[in-house]
Image 1 (tube, rainbow, N blue to C red):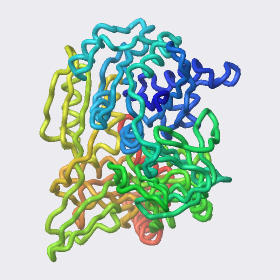
Image 2: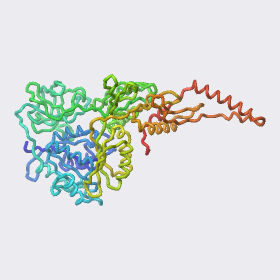
Image 3: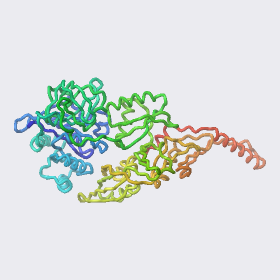
Image 4: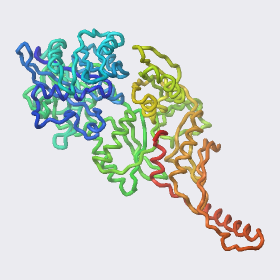
Length: 598
């Protein structure tokens, strides 16, 4: 165990985490130059295109240190987005130390701080690494000051490197060996292993990634998951090189995988403890919790005939992503579909994109919503995440919605614009501090519903890409919520209904009406698009009718002849409006989801 090091790399988005992992893998000779590709640990196309890590990967690096000893360095890669913060916390719980990556030109940002606090909560050794020193805009001295002032770490221990150019990689590996402690644990104790990830293999079932804290596990052992008391027989254990490499045993201190014929990823809960059935551990490892979705949206197939195909695709997708939650749903406008729960807006985008790319599904998603709580006058509490189930307003005593504590780190010059944006989104209780000269951190309490839509895009736009954003869920707060219905030609379109704050209802109503006006084609009769709260109309747009010039044949005579023809046409249009139905194209539903700046 003295020759094992378990570590992770933490950083703000786009500070070079995947590039540094690539260089460590190359330097330790795990991959030849011929087989190498950038972002080697990111296996999905969407990860490589967006430059983000969605599914964390693990790799065991063989390294001969300066002292001549052979070490096994287990790099537990983590997702880089706030939606997956629970997975990051479980990955960190499996480590003894972390490399804290800071961009030499950007400096310390919002998620850098959040990740440092998370690492400190797990009592991990932190080694600061200043990356991208090759950039013209790199300011190493300023970044060292930030590391000392904002993070409270010793800037003199910071390692300077450029992952892109391969500068300082050996120093990083030596720091992992010398500055991070070896794992503790006893091989003689009962087995206690933490699940920090799982993925699905179509031939072997769910493959569990785990860190063994005590005891050992071998093929043939009967293991038990402590959260759901499920029993499985171990078929294979091993470690992750770039491919799986089987071993005879996984013992205390090791990071590796267990294959035991588990049918779906849903049966393996991240953060759960594995123990032996005949000699169980006394108590599970701390920190386990069920991951609950916070953003909800309905998915419908564009063609109703594709419903069975969409169901099949979702079932297959769920094998790989235990965080996705779905149940059957239906809409008068869009037909049969599914109500899905997501960890956040990025998770929603990923699911949508993967369903379209990997499973060939053409889908429509409704406006994202959050989970609201309503206390009724009879004392009953109702939780609603779908506007269709909004309770009768007469029965509602009080309503509450989830709030977040949003931390926004920006250059000082953008303070006014960002404050205005947060106030528009009902941000309250603003606090600020100055972590470094020229930079300001704004902290707001904001409703989650105002953030999930296009807040991040707007923030990036008004700060020219320099703003960084991080959030934590806090307790729900009372709110004046109403249901906004959209009426097309007097008929309610259930798929476009929203639950919104009363102050924002008119803004939303106008926005949706204007977008639908641009998307719905003209008909032979006039179409009214209205936003309504109950029976009160709060916004309206009108699509004018196609009109035939019925007065063209009048070549003289009295004005009453023209008026008579126009009145006749008017009656015909009125009759047509009563019997005619409005065709709403699929693009109209998509247009409602677009943000203002598109």
